[in-house]
Length: 267
Image 1 (cartoon, rainbow, N blue to C red):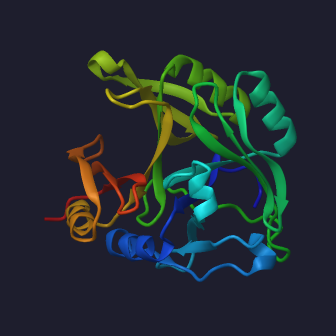
Image 2: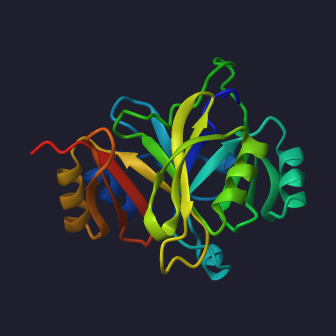
Image 3: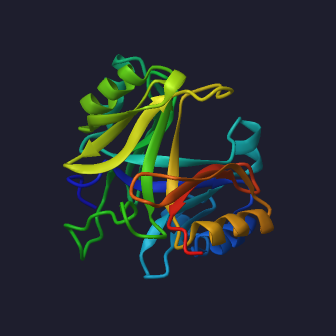
């Protein structure tokens, strides 16, 4: 996959129970989790692709082993940022106050590292290797309009101003426009290559650290919310209307990973 595309090129669900998580996201979003990747592709870990109804990939699933859980890993959604030089990007992030959580390593799909930004939000950095028969392939996991894609990337930061500067410097993300949110300050809209990709806001009360949240597109927000509740998840922020007439909400899946949903209200 080429790097001249959306800043986010992949999304990954880390979960202790990929099978149950697959049933949940199938009911809520319409995704299907694939079989475990062969060891030569995954390095022996439990890794699966998330399939959309149109045949494309929506991201991946990392099954957390007992050792990973014992080491502090927890269910969560993670985003991958594109980089043309992972090692240089990681070094620059560390120089600006970020930390390395997983040093850069090579996989058949590309070179990858996990870091935190200076405010503590964890992210992956990746230089992908395109398929041999598609040297100019681009990621299709993010789309501002389509269901079964991530449609919005939202960072809650302990220092929104510093976060705007950081992601602009390291990933070419720009910030134009904002919406006041009272005591939380401004909701600052983000763009990449001229496309709206998300926003940065201050920390909500009770949030212990900075974190990215990813909003998944659904065909009907009320149907999806009902599916969250009937399939073992929790709705923590009820659907609210957003600019443009659609609705968004926030939830937690049965294994504890936070997620967002966005889509129209059809009833």
